[in-house]
Image (cartoon, rainbow, N blue to C red; front, top):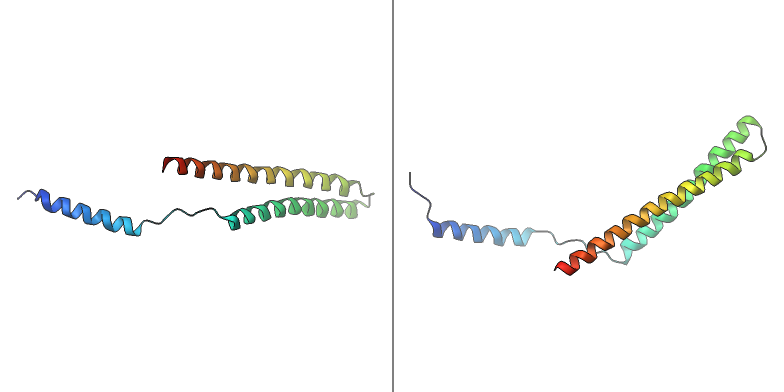
Length: 107
């Protein structure tokens, strides 16, 4: 069995590297559209929390025939849940921007 030619192996390796370079996807850049999408996501999370709280509170008040006590309680809980979810999204955005900033410094 013969040993492979070193020159041919180097040539093959350079060709493989060239092809990989052409087909490597470039990292997605974060533009203002992405940030706008994140802002809308945060608004929707807040409104959804309040809407779900309203629905549950109204449903319980209708079921038990009470004053709007459950409505007030669950709207407050929905607001709290929406704010907490919104804050988690804000932390996610901050981590993404920190990671992009560190990638920019390495380049």
